[in-house]
Length: 340
Image 1: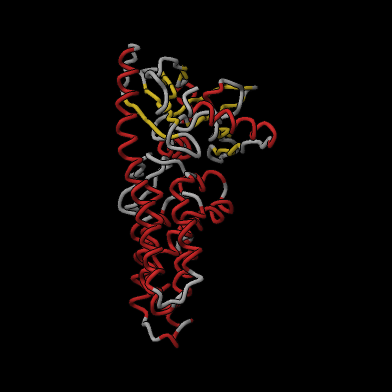
Image 2: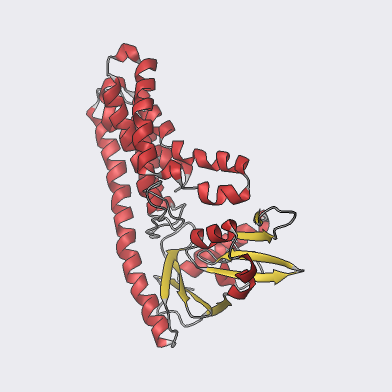
């Protein structure tokens, strides 16, 4: 999830844990520590594209990491606020819950987190909510900033914290029901079109839980369709992406290629352009793919062949920003989600 959602949720948990004893200091610690697992982003930027590929949402998003770091953070918080007389154990427990909240809501997105590292490399991705969804964030945004203005002994602080967490959590639960229903729609639509799907992956599009993208894996590639919950009929307009797996045959012994296949969960396309090979993560496809324009894919990696005894490497390609075009695209997203 986005930084704001993590911080607000962490602040609300801080209030419920130690707000009555230390007031806004608990909220501040909760909000700050909630962002700690995402330290993998700046650290990954220093490691190079290949290493960052698997480091993101890796060990810092594991149960082992948060369990080991929470006592250290609790000790630090108690040292800083020793005059409050709370003790390190209550601080540690509260901050452990904050860190767990980060892992929990990240697991509901589609990127996947490796909860059980280093014992298992399996990535868990429920994929029922976009990484930015304002309807999840709004209840927390309305309650957490408001409670910090109240005296720490006011019961209203706890009421606001519970309200923010409760409403946002109900919305998160509703996304599970929504996804289950959408999954049925896509599976029936693919079957009706004669698509022999080996797997089906369904996720909401950016910034909403109304317009969904479904991708069916076939023997040679993938069929992609979009469906809004406000559409009058199931999707019947599919786009085919060939896998082109043969391009990877010379590189299958390379660790970076194995990492790409693992991170993409096997939903990928390889294309050749100008003598270079590009690996596309098809779980996300193109930016606003339903527009059928020539925008690049959200996650694209250029494969750098091995040379001079060095293994193969990758270069992560960043999306270009066109503010005028993107504002117009956002309006078109609203129209498409509305069923038009």
